[in-house]
Image (cartoon, rainbow, N blue to C red; front, side, top):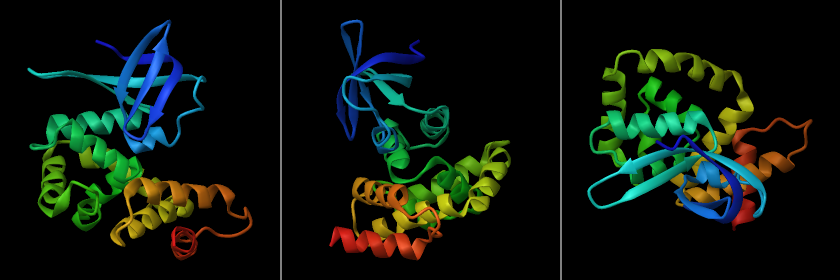
Length: 203
């Protein structure tokens, strides 16, 4: 089993990356959450991996953090009807902590706004993860942490607001992340501010 891949970033696209490991190029399917934080081409990178085998294909999935890979595996292993494609869509559409918080609170509306998920799948995700012993209990701390960090919560809510207005997930995430990075350190980063400035830039 391949646990991780470390090498030079040869190619980088929103849904896949190629890492050159001593002259061998490894093709990895990745979520937008990983793509947005990849280094420049030619730089050293390490991606944690999940090797998925079916009757028709062998696919390697890559993630920058353990939290991303763990959530991906939880979704495809424990939620009926959720495969790797939808697992990547979830990670691309919502930060890990925001997803955990939504499951803990049973917020199917937020989950349903993720592209490809929809209302029924969102309800199934919440129901089946809550049925798994220890899952939601283990996420209570993550939920509390998300609420204790107003900036992170505002960023997640702003992305969801843009998605609800019809903007693409990748576009919304990149716009909000750019605004957060360039924001005045002395100014509170609120949902209203982020959405307002994002709409101004996108329009």
